[in-house]
Length: 132
Image (cartoon, rainbow, N blue to C red; front, top):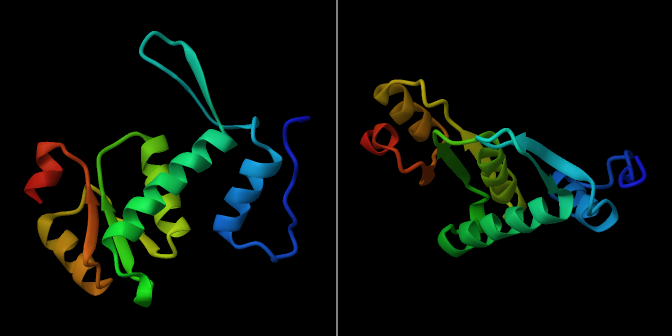
């Protein structure tokens, strides 16, 4: 594709740096493509997506003490693009992303949060997740 430039594959770039590389070198290349309720196709480019990842990273940095590179959990019923943006933003902030399945029981969620020493959790606004 003329809009895509492959990043170095020699291990010199960490994952957050690969995202930034694509924002700079493949800015108009599609990262996400989806259809809305009317079946209209929408495309989110690397540059637009990486801006969103950086916004999430800013929120994480504002609320999380980064000194110990903590695990930040995600317990959310949401679309794939939003979920991935939160994961990418957590990684961009220098934290460890800890996605938790919404299908886990309350006891399992509590155990996972404790085992991973998660102090911060992104939780979706739906009643089921808020109840947990």
